[in-house]
Picture 1 (cartoon, rainbow, N blue to C red):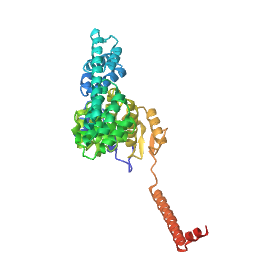
Picture 2: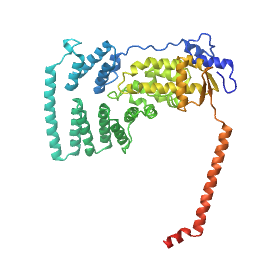
Picture 3: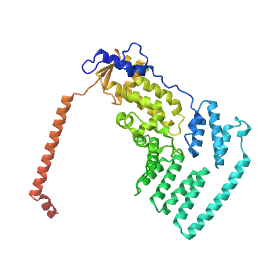
Picture 4: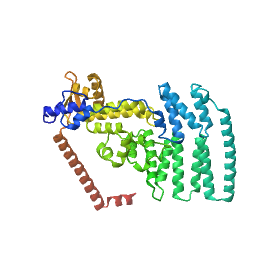
Length: 445
């Protein structure tokens, strides 16, 4: 591999060592390099379901456990997730979802985790009584025209429907409180409730809309509310596959969020949002975001590895995280795309400083075959992400640097032509005005 001016052999060896883990004959330039080679890579350990579930609360905790059971190949983990979902549902009032979980268990957990018809009947009976009471109270509030009481009545209805899994009715009830909101605090509460239900329904267009409404309230928002809105906006951008915008929103989340939004997202989830763009300023040097990275050390390490061009280590971290990321309810659909983008970015960054790159050495750095690497590079060259050409016989990638001198002359000529055109147009307009051409033409008409 050669640099712009024939880089010294020691630099080449150092770059090679950075790309490849466990190279015994690579020279160590500093103590940190020695530590890096001896540092263990995290193992792909089985997800601790109990610890994972403890990060969340409310409906999302149950839905994440069900999602994990549906997408996990390990039967033991499936049953553990379903058992925890069953126990969590018995604490609530959603009998419909409870029956679905019992059906998924299908008797595999014994008689203690079967359909509890008595409990379901009791909960449904209480729900009917509660609904009748809420309706009578709301009708009384409407008769008396008390705005605050009507708002509270619709809000109670929203909470009732949400607890019983009727998300569409819950959303309508929360939105109806808007006409009866008298303070900015009420509007923010309405927006947060609508956002919560919209996320559960997967209606992320509504999420974006109500985040915008909350941000436009005249009064200043408190830091935890701002953090919640940024998380919600980040999830909406993620769902729309606007990954850069999603990353920026998550990076703006401050430590004041804490565990206050556990009904939607955990602090650990936010650390997965950082991407390979502007790592130094936006991630590594971001004091607020550093708090989230400390919760997931492996993400912190892979980001540092990427920034330091230790791609083998970075990609190995990513590989070990992949199985658990595929079990995340929000990010699972985007894992493959994001991994491809990160790998492409690493390939581009690896080749950027050099005039030529030995593809055999590069293949070792990325733990892949030369043939596989060649196909990846061909794709990037075709997409114009790498300006280079491949010597397939000698397995060398040659950078195709632009002729800066010629490009500068072309820009100067283009600017001169544009200036000439503008001056001619100005003179023409001046002559038209001088001879009153427009006025005469209008008179003839």
